[in-house]
Image: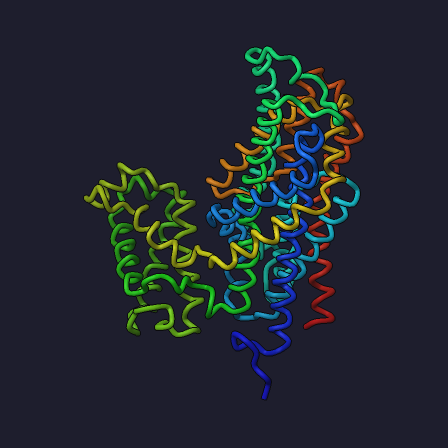
Length: 478
């Protein structure tokens, strides 16, 4: 009889789980020194802070951003893999997919860091996830492409595309506007790395560095949380598919209320675009009520372990279809419910914490990995950001403008639940300020070509690496 380890897993599966968790932590550690070099580049390059206090402070801000960042982006990462992977029906296969994804992302991140090319960890992670989704769909009995959540991938891909363009334009406009209001020309001169800037300029640059570091932790830290939750949900679904902190006596009542509210939706809400989604939500509510009617609900432990993934899958179906259905018009929903205080959206908000959650220990672990990683390996990217994007070296105003736009953009994306690239937003912002200062002639074509190539190649390379590693691991580990 097989020896059973923690969580009821056999030793081989438990070892694979540990390897995946370590790899996820390694990805966040590398993310720290790979991406956060962008945040400290301006304060180090302008001599506003010495490298050691700069990276320590940035690490603390990153860790703080993780801890207060919420989990909206994290759940977006979890959604990228199909529910079948997270169902626990083939734990070993699912863990091999995740290990392949992480191995691909880590290798590409390390390679681009070694070459000193600003490259997005978010972009890398999304490509790796799409790759393993495709690999999963290549396994027996599945349709090619069915393993990828294409709708969510398109949303994230759009955010990764639009955010650098926004960063470029907004930073250029902010720099041009600042020339109208700031009369001290020192701020627009090239930074002298050997001289300490005036106190007010240092204060602005330290503040913008703080903002980018916090925003990076707030957004990228959630990706790490999402990765760890994906691993735990996949490997030990009976423990992690549902939030054990919730009151499960309330679950049937919430689902029943959603069922009633869906039935009361006016015809204007059930158009051709929404009909399929609303039908799926109605079917899911019936399934949850059927599953929960056969035993007394109290806490998560009152639900049989084998039923928990089924309940999660149906709850996720309700949540995701509602988010896509575009029926959140408050006036329409109030009319449907005949109750101004009990909208369908309010009921959905009550339901989401049952599946969209992360234990505080996970947030602490990710904050430590990201914060410590921030304090290491920043020099290669700092030189690229400070000296190699423009032919002239970066000015104080350029650094502050780019970082202010980057931090604002990243925080806004976090609120929308979209992962964006700190690297691409900030480096494109620097490029925008260079153009605003002296036109396109001030850009270094070779550096921009390398950044552009990394941006273009990241998806196909990481997709290919993920697929390759999956089939390699499948041969040797399955």
